[in-house]
Image (cartoon, rainbow, N blue to C red):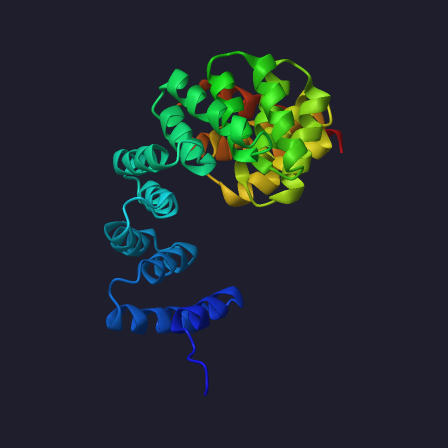
Length: 296
């Protein structure tokens, strides 16, 4: 006698092998014949979320929750999908329901803590994240965001401690590297800031904010040639950054690259036409360019 094959298990195998289209097709067929299959609805939500369709993921996760409203997994993933579509109140409710069912659920507490942080409810955020870390002391997202709570509270020593813990758990956590770089910059530890921003830039070279911050730190260590390179990389992705053009112009001035300085300050003025600072620096660099041309 041939054993029957579980259609859900087949769909899971397709999902695990990366064949999302086939997995989705089989799951869709399954929920038509068995609309009370919560795991099938849930996996459909996971797939849509992975494909960048959080609104569709909400619909599928919601179907799963309606079938089992005591599943912290379903509730947490529904909350994550609500977060992705910008509905933080609905998301927070889902995370709270997940915590009510499973008080030590790390992800639900972490995500609720992140929402409370975004809402400026710092004490509540801290409480959520600290409980998450009691359950899993190495949870990098909980560490990172607890660091962000302390950063917002201006307790930089505790923020640094949490960011470093996050990096112990995940040495390539870009967000922790970026935040640690910000703290070092604020503390005027510019060489350490360069180190952190450079590591982050290596991992995500196309993120303008990281390149801008690296360039600013390089200016502080008077590495203007490298700062120019970072400003140019950043401006390739965010060409309307007034501060970026100003920084490029200022480092170009330091390197006596008058022509590049003139070009940068003109671009800064194009972004902010009423900027007195940019107008003055354009005048200075234009005079320097004229003098150098006459000297030739």
